Length: 193
Image (cartoon, rainbow, N blue to C red; front, side, top):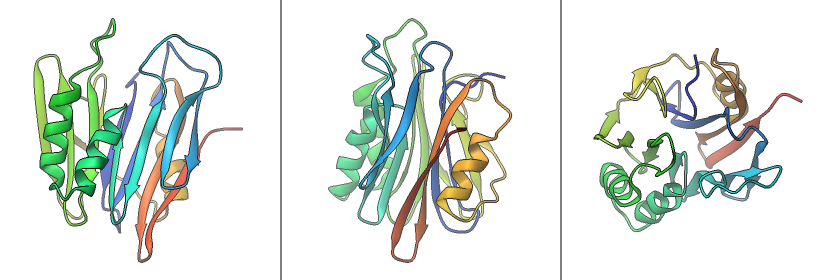
């Protein structure tokens, strides 16, 4: 099954946010850790405004994951003190779905320091849901466009990045994760060598 991009978030132990990059059209990309964020960058030139973006960003004790430029919009609102739900709704409405040939949805999850939310905006739908402690959920740009329960066992950013990379879905290029520790979030990426 091909999911496209996927956002996974929850509480296997502490809060985590994860990202899976899968692509049929633009496979030559990678994830890079840069200070308090993880960026998706192309390995060769493409003429497409949607393929290079921050997929995970940490702002203090808050974090966001998404499949596009709306990562920064959500992070800015979290930094200003918006609750996670409001940051997601406002940013998803502002960015709207991608105006590409597939009308690709924008997906995201945000942790506001207390609560964790996951959302999606499509051509005909906007949805934001709370993820409760003890739960983990996945949402993707194709096939799984409503949050659904997923079992995550990892208890570090590195373990979770590897675990979500190994999900049985087609065309996975790389994965990224943020995992909250006592002294803040740790970041990790995974890609087969």
